[in-house]
Length: 500
Image (cartoon, rainbow, N blue to C red; front, top):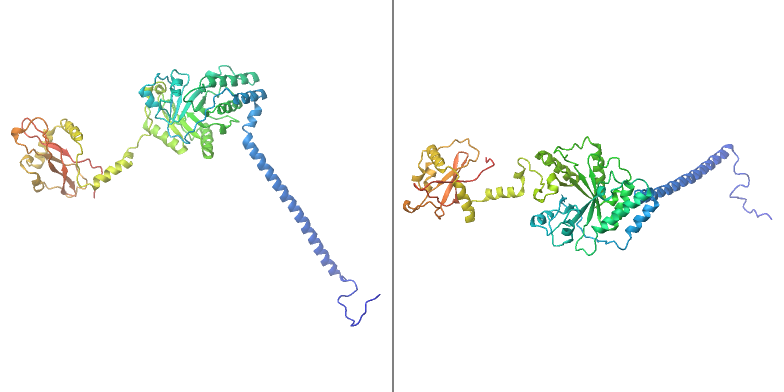
């Protein structure tokens, strides 16, 4: 049935729409472009999804490697029986596990490897209490007793030095029997010495020394985990000249810090050149990177021979290096390691005029500059000054001043000094020391050899731009002399600066 055609008007023609060749060409181009766009979209979507999955897989793999590469890889390098023995000893119920709440960052440390008295003497107690971290040799007599006695003052970090060369006396090879034996010997030593039951105070950490030539690095990591399970902070002792050069697969994250021996100063007193030594650079990079990530303590233990002269420049350079890298310095003599009386502080030497920059010295300068009067506050200080006057040739100084000024000071009253002052050059710009006589007002008949207890107010003279200025000060006591009243000279002050 056909539709009725009333008006004869149609919206579209009923014939073919594409009649010319260019119309077909345009349609083909548009279709090809759309197909290429769809294919490109699908291809780039596939690549993006594949890249995203690959990145996520790499992140997961890297995180797992950071957690287990140094631990699991080293454990896998150990025989399975050795790993099982370490695990069993770490979870043993017979071991005393003492936890400590310690400060995050110590500021001082010291090493004493000698014996201690029982009971501890006053000098020994003072020496042990001056350091935040103290390293002791637990094998020496009296050391375990002093650590267990909580009445003996010590720093918060008490570290026992474990010499693996003395503990593990046999050669550890790659055999499972030797490694298991080394693990058992170390565990037995810790339980019999550092972790004895019913003690009032325990060691907080251990310093592992002599490990490089005794055990392998994977076994060192396993023993470190065992010591951590016993509640001990483990510090690694690194010695010159190799330091950490050539050490592979060392799990640095297990250690609480490094103690580097003779890293800045050699045993002969010479400085160590860090710019030409790659081995020390490797060690420096290791502990600096750890200190940026967590609480990691680095200590420099540089032992100097007894008969070697140590210059201030070498010590100052070592202190500056330690301060720059965040290390704690300790530079003892060889004899100080076993003798408490030979231990001296290792403060940083001052430069030539660095003491003038100290705050307390600057405060003294400022107080003296602002003060109008200067007085001696106590009788003890006055007596100390009087004891020094007897050592000076007062009579010679008095005659010299009198001859220079051509004036008899004994005949002039105090306030008349200003009228009899000599003419001074006007080019003088530096403050000069002025000596002023102290006159006795006591009659000659009552003068004795001892000091007369009377306070006299005198004036000291300051030479400044060619002018004499006077200020009132409380002078010292008057001194007597057998032949007459002696003039005591009052030193105004040592003026170390120049006024305009």
